[in-house]
Image (cartoon, rainbow, N blue to C red; front, side, top):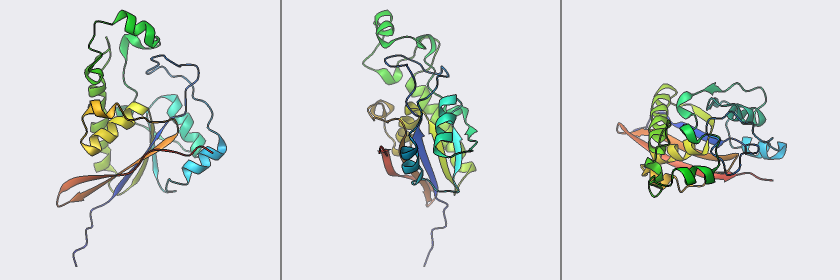
Length: 203
């Protein structure tokens, strides 16, 4: 009997908690605080995560804040590849103001739309994919928890499933929800599987 000894690498992606006072605004990389995660919700989500998992996070404070709510005392490794999309001159401005000033841009192709001084979602997705490739190789066989932003999680799903990034933008990712992706090698080829997407544990 041939046994497939290829290591299995499980990625547990968690979106940070809802941010405070930034509705209808491009808050981007502003280091705004997150709402508190109810203890019962944190406990329910944490039951899906292995105790031995290695914790990673996007570098903004709301990711670390959410990680600490889920696992007391955790010190997640900050991963710059998983930072929020850089929205350039749109940062801090309302959606209405941005649309009014930049109505001439191609809003029908949002994935390729590049904010002045920032990056497109397509560029953002390439950055996330590069981080996933590097860390999957480095931590092969481990369980990895990443507390990050909705865009990074959409990009991770697109990378794993071979989706067009424009399709990925149509995936809803709720605050403090779990998306699990699993990587294995089969005959030298990478295979990704989805365990769950946008699993919410509201109680």
